Length: 332
Image (cartoon, rainbow, N blue to C red; front, side, top):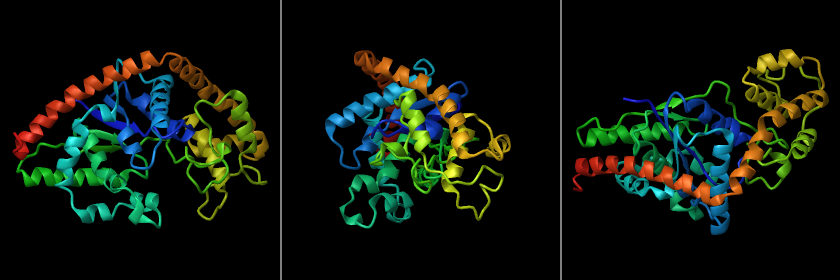
């Protein structure tokens, strides 16, 4: 069987450097080695309150960003999650397989819902079930995961195993994680203890994929650091130089080299000097993407057409899987 990947990004705002380094850069590198399905996870996006017009704009911006970063529609299936009804159909069946106790252990719900869990949407609570359906509907063999998604993939494997046991078959393949070599969580430029986020009120906290060269330079210039020079102790266990660690990791990831190599190359330099090199590297890697995003957004009809074609491909595959599952369950 072909190695098949499923992954996606929520269209909840302009994509930023964290999305690129944490996901899209790796999507591009995988497209020659796997059969890839990449979705705009718009159903996941509405688990929290979303303005319809803003959501639609975000969907198009995310699609444009995928293409601008180098994802090829001839090599990948790029589609909107909501355009493939089998996702929600399978999600309900998996809701009936999964156990409440399993969901209660999901740490991401606790983090996103905060202290007021009673007011969180049911969709946010059952988010991992829909994610499992996203994966299993395409019989994905591999799923790229970061630290915050490992638990959800484990849940998906548990659900698939229980389905197989409940119906006495081996229908679902248990998807394996892909953990990218150079990926580490990209943190806020203003606070090295917080993840870089689309929802952060300060635009200075992130590098957007649509930022101009001048914006990149200014944001890196204003990025929080400390007064100490770069040295090999930045990543020591007791070190609290979180902002310094973040900038080193960003450079490391962009240049596909280890943090140790970056530290060795810049040992003794001040962060004022280092920021100039980091800005140049960001401009080299991000500015071409920014220009291509503008190009794709200049013709939304073509962008929508590409998404429609991708959704049709995804739907054809998903419907076949859904029919097989319905037969196993006894629905047909």
